[in-house]
Length: 250
Image 1: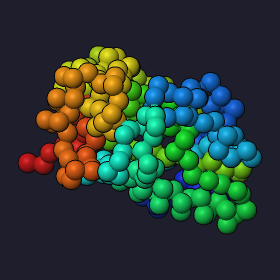
Image 2 (image 1 turned 180 degrees about the horizontal axis):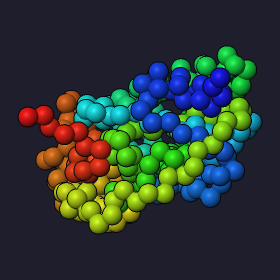
Image 3 (image 1 turned 90 degrees about the vertical axis):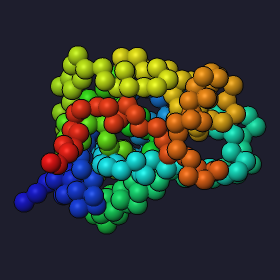
Image 4 (image 1 turned 135 degrees about the horizontal axis):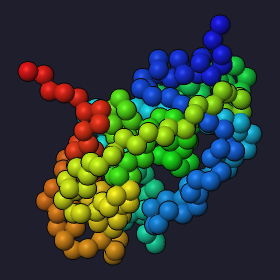
């Protein structure tokens, strides 16, 4: 007979996630919370669900660049800008997929009698390491053994008490610096991202004064924009990572 934690993982795999791990809120207390630069505010599991007793991290394999499509309203000024855009609408394709798939896990737990919610507001990358999913690489992204950094994350917070997984401890980067060398704007240092030089930050923050002119120029040249109000997030450092990279046939 499977444990509740095993049942939850099975439901997550059935929902289309490729890696699943669990931890407790107590084990995540040392993670970074609060405002991270100008981008966003990160919350603790208890902030999101006061009765939280377990944190489940779910990884989805973003195997196509189209998953990284972002659509903003015409009056969009960027996160952290004041005054903010008149409209608060902001759509990121992989977030929509993650929410829909995570809801299947939330619904399963609720039907078992445990209040649960899905969350994108906790520190997902660092929490994923605690839950055993992978290593936070030199590009600052989560790197998993099976899919490298080609995963997107969401959490499920639940009042169910689940068996916890061991934190991930293997260094998957070693001496490799392909992501650092591949970045066209030199935004990456080992285990550190200079956010103002990141082209994704430039694209999503069109009015931010801290983006250098040379980064804006490369953003306009290299970032794909299917429509005037949309763009595809830069994935150069992800594509450069050899870990879990699908091998070409033939």
